[in-house]
Length: 104
Image (tube, rainbow, N blue to C red; front, side):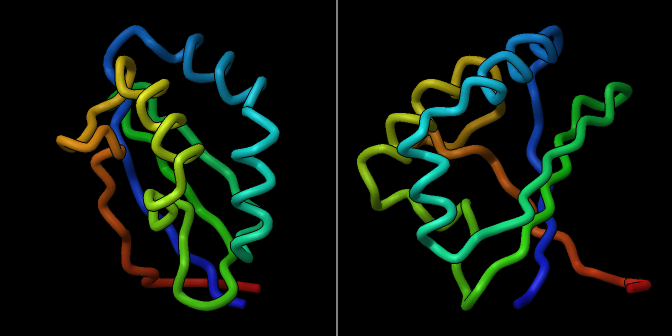
């Protein structure tokens, strides 16, 4: 199982709303993520920059950012698009990060 990390950007002033929406994440999204081999998924926020930092364990080459072909993922992206920086398809602007150190 591999670990991957990425960053996204929250629009200013939406920390509480972002947390609220993720505390009530749709069951279908959680199921899709788990069914896709993604686990141990965390998102952290740097409040100085509004950068969201995600890390997850994946089986294979699929991350949560690769699930856009599914209707429910597209609906989730649409739901989140008003509070995040997004691409033209409403997927979050995502930058994958290179791991430069790991201590198990």
